[in-house]
Amino acid sequence: MVITRLIVTTLAVLFAASSYAQTDSERTAMPSKGLVWGSKMTNEAGPCCAASGGKAADPTEAAVLAKLPGHASRDADILRLSLEGGRTLKITDCWDETACEADRFRRHRLAAWWPEARLYVVNVGLYEAGEAYLISEKDGRTTQVAAPPVLSPSGQHAVALQSNPMVGVVLNVIDLTTEPPKVVEVDDMPTCSGSGPDSLLRPKPVWVDDSHVRFEGVSLQPGDKPNSKQLLKIGGGKPAWEC
Picture 1 (tube, helix red, strand yellow):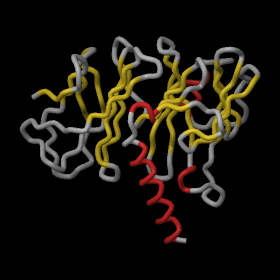
Picture 2: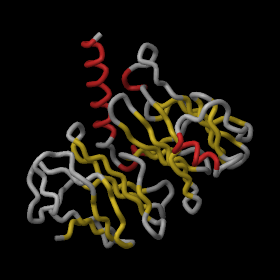
Picture 3: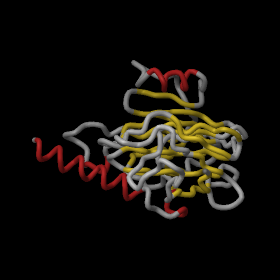
Picture 4: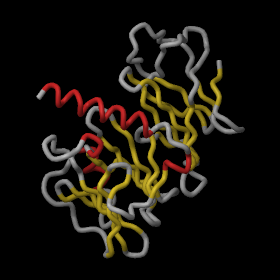
């Protein structure tokens, strides 16, 4: 049993890591064949949504759903999202160790609705990792990012971050002015005083203004300097670190 769990965990981590190496065109897909990025997703005829039934999946999602009556709902392991044209996107969890292959372990929680961009943000729990989906209300087109993103003050950009010893640093800068959103992966690290070759980004991205993101909190890497500067400039071409 221990060996089985180790194999499943390893596969899940490898799958998550490989997903972040995709090109921009490979990050977005339509739910046309029942599976998108390993998640069971189907685009169905008929309007959404009945009131959520049974116990809420978690308080955070329940609060989001309460603000979107008729727009999104949950029924046990099924999350439904309203699409244009009187259609519904049905997303089904697969969270049973005895029934799901490692690369299809998925738990989907609606994290936010961005009305300006007409996007649903869905937090996706993997076996021992995670990612997020940006789902277009227009047609269910789904863009894969590292984590639930943090929206800029103008709503034109967002950043998604995973930073931990298991996966390292995965940082996405997302341009929401395009359809689908354009995702740029930041593959370098700050070089300011106090940064080292094995440093991690601090886990909380905070927008200082519409073109700068500061990373706050406590690094999960022992030995990281808590006062080293971690400030990313967005816009004007490729994202760049500032010291």
